[in-house]
Length: 453
Image (cartoon, helix red, strand yellow):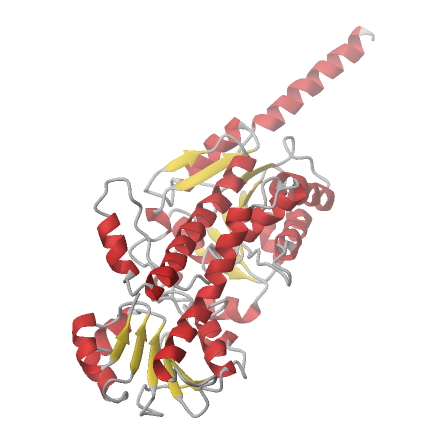
């Protein structure tokens, strides 16, 4: 190599090093959020408090509603959405204006409970087509460990013509939003961040501190951050499954599992969990990502698989319990009217998607019962007709009922539905199955054939 060529090579190395070192200013970076659901919209609103924040979604109706200050998921108020720093668009070209692009699209499971990566891969292609040099792409969507680097990154590079580490950077920060818990908003939940380099991790720590006041944890790698997300939700699924299984055993022994939990909880290292229906987008879905990863490495993941099966069966146990109380000598429930209180998958959350209340409804309907469902906060835009329930706007609409099942404890239920209100639609000593302990047990037993875990 001659001296001139060597000098040129040295200059290129310096230029490459400079390009790798340049990161946006975390205090002033323009942030774009892709996917404006339960995760993306509150995050966008948070970033909008300190600078320009661009929201992108493929749902034109949702974007139009947000532009008018309407959030059907009730995560953000009209005042939140009126912030002049916020922009909402279905035009993917807005991504070109962002210094940081945060991916918050869903990763559901397909038939057979296999992870469906189509939304996150489609988002990666779209971002790649519009990625500006120097930008950072951060994924918050739940994925198998390795997905960000092995599946999403190649699409970003292919569609952008840019190279990660030289022209742009990537990171991962798992979402931890808890829908319906307005006292614990996105800024109140400690957040994990991980970048493709230590410098990117430092950048993400500073960036997210604009929104998160509860603190940040820098994971040692993107894979670790991905794994942490599915572990934390799988752990919860497994623990709830244990209590759900104990509920069934102790009920057969005429013991209240809640009494057992209270007694066991007197020991300092006992972790308290309560039985319930496990649905929604996270706890009932994320374990399948671990199961999928396990299959790829020849592991059956028996504990995780068993927990999922137990929690899926719990709705049928509740239906069986009501059946035994209502018509113990019959194989069906034909001619009986049952009111189910709650359609949402979680207390104080309007979302009915993947709600296990419908599993209870379906199980009762399959036995021949006439099932009615009351939930004043439910967003029924995703309701699938013919699922076995007649939706009622007032609990008295089809009263009297032969039995009531409580699957949710919304604040509005606690305010408006007490024993005396239920007594107006349910005959004395009729079955009341209260999975959520909505009403006072001692008072309820004076009026109904009352059961609670």
